[in-house]
Length: 213
Image 1 (cartoon, rainbow, N blue to C red):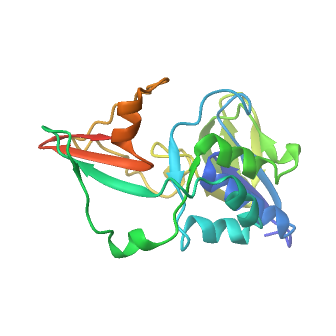
Image 2: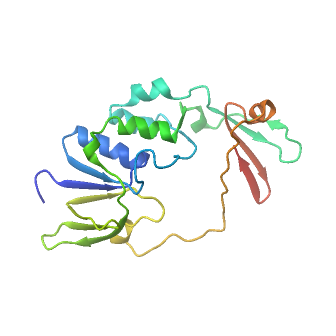
Image 3: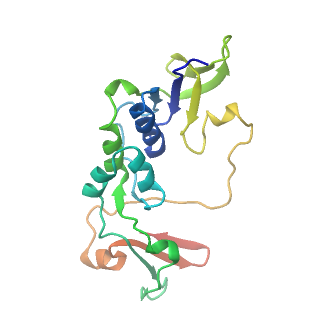
């Protein structure tokens, strides 16, 4: 392997980008290959809460913790259970891990924060990985759906449940567990809806069904 290995990160989500920032700041040659066609290709989904002993620790190592603290929602750390039949809020004592500092941040805002710490040339948009193979010199040969071929000494798979990078290590595939999530958005919630959810996350368990808001 070269003294300065070529590192390919598959997937430009929070995990892949955080790894890219840390590696780039330590002088490694790193490229992130993302399926999305561009930075603004699609919405990034809901919010994340970053715990001080996990996500915040990673941002500290990436040198972005102070920037994160400036934009995170510290007021949105509340957690509440709601009765599925009456709508009554059931207050509970926080668990031990819930006492940790864990402010929320929108996924898109977090992604923008991480992208701001990387030069544009680190990101390769519109690159959907198709296959990871071996080259003649022992490197990893990456084949993408846009017909691009890339060689890398190290491959980091951060491309989700149906990871193509994982297939280089195992033939085991994800399988359906019987749990289905449906995601929807209320663009203009009423005051009563906002009050019910509160400042954080609402959990409502009704037998085999549940609502998270």
